[in-house]
Image 1: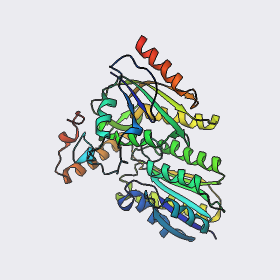
Image 2: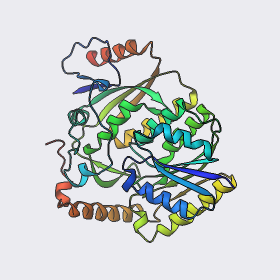
Image 3: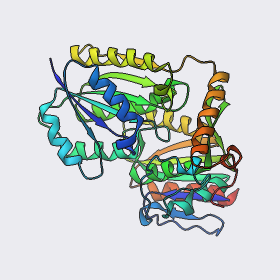
Image 4: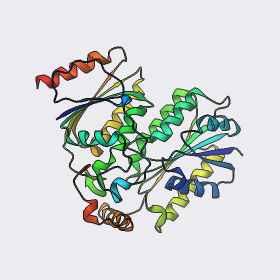
Length: 201
Length: 170
């Protein structure tokens, strides 16, 4: 059985949903795993750690329709500091939108990096409604897919998976409005204030 | 208004004062922290008070934009991507249906014609990924229409000059 290095490419890695997804992955993976947040200062150190692992799992949120700058900058360093034994690269990406397919471009970017730099591309799990799903009963759907993701990487039988809240778009809009309204309320901001059309005023 | 955002200095003559040309490489712009402050604490304003806060209001106001960026792994390279990530105060946290998909509601953002000019030697696959990215950007960045132009670093300033001429003639 191989070993898996999990790297969190979220800009708010220490308190991110990606960290929670990565923890679920580790708990449900039989292979040896190690977890690190990508920071602006540890790129070279992480590149050297890759030597010890058969697989790399990149966990990150969708940012402005693509991979976050935090991860982009790490990949640029990795391109300059490749390990002698290149691990297979898998992806666990989440977005706040209902449609998990909105993650597709970010996945294709990682695939492109792999082809340009000689890494085998592995499995993918695309999560929609990823901002809130872990705090709903639909968490079980995520858990089920994370178990499948872990099994596919352990066995090197790579596959593409996706999940999201099984809600109609109308229900999702209602639920997400309530979620964000409560988020604002906890900061003393009303829904009306959050709905301002003004920018920098 | 029209706006040029570039990830490098451009030696291109622009006659009109109404076309600001911003060299992102000369500005101090930190990475987005993903704190959601611009949605739930200070709506419409980023909590990081660096040069980005001068740029996203310009993006919002513009009815035509020209983005100039190196392409990297089928996406924008670091300077442009950093700025685009920092531009999320122009959106609300709340979600709407747009073209049958869920997307964030825009604040006072003018629908714009976008020209995305990317440079570097790239494969057909990389071009295709970038086209898909800009198609997604169109939904989330209020592009009424868009055009992607691929060029080389050597040809870049000529291509920018041609695009500016078209704007000045229109």
